[in-house]
Image (cartoon, rainbow, N blue to C red):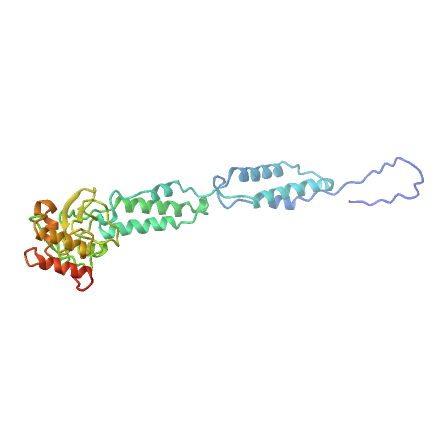
Length: 313
């Protein structure tokens, strides 16, 4: 206060009137500093509740009269504190991932193998990059999300199909032989006749399937046997080339040469079964020693194979 007065010797209840006493003016420094606070980003980047709370606090601070005295200082300090608290509580909106999620859901129309390596690799890399974008980004980092989405969309639009392949293509060093007269394939060894090993003989950039003689799909480690069907599919899943496997010595189609095959070969050799009965592929497979005729030598060879005395490769 500007003046200090001492009142002494009051012994009873009295009304005292003091004149000439003027309270000090309130201090607005902290309030002015608070009002001057400015968010780093445009208001639209902040969540509605937090930016509204901040602007309301600033407005309340601005509306405080500037002629208050020291008795009003707590109110002024509270207004300043409210602004600072609201400023510190500002929360940026989260980034929007809708476009990125839509892009990540894109799936090539055809299997990857039907696209050129470069174009499918670019697409795969873009998708991986999109999947790795942090899900904790805020709206000021929206460009990171949008760029990832755009990269996926561009890569998807840039996918290029390989030229169509309508027939099987064997490796140059392959020992397999495709007979186009009856669409059979020979040369698959009983030592290396898993599905994976059979598929490795082809160089086609296309889906190739193998089923057994009953049409049941083979898995990678299954054995390919006589009667198995190898099919080449185009990008739409239609069969464009197909061959049937003949493995000499395997007459029952299980991918092995053993006593059961000897029995079938014996029935063919004795005339109990004919070409019409077993079909041309099984009939050809009964010629275990590949000498051009089915006889007791083939039967004996298969019996020995069943006893593990010989190995029919």
